[in-house]
Image (cartoon, rainbow, N blue to C red):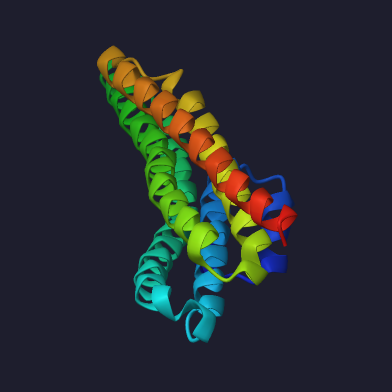
Length: 211
């Protein structure tokens, strides 16, 4: 059974166990899914309300996009654990001869790159998710403005957590060009996520204070 299909209790039990996977990478992806779900909720609570008739078409579009992202993040929960398991399989390859050792090293490097790219994918999708959250914070049902704020917090946590998982994998990758490009990408995505979150929270706090 996929992780995302487990009950919350069973997922948490597995997360808390001595098994190294699922771990922080899957949790970061789950945080992205939770953030997107909250954005979808604000859309649902806006659509159909007379007060927000002027933005209903836009909210429906945002809802479709948010739901697509929620599903993507949910898939990444399992993809992260699968990537980790592949890396462990590579470390388990035989290394008794020079040829075996060379094959094992190549397999480890390839699996480590994949393990870095999954959380990097989480980060890239977070930027899209935050853009949607900003729209619902600005135009959505004000009774749910705090939910838009929590969405932003969850998405930022997802970005920060995913970044750590990219960075720890980059440490053991020999390909300096790959490491350089991905390190720069992580830094840029983090800055963008942090800035977007602060902008959303400024909108949220202003609306709460003016309520």
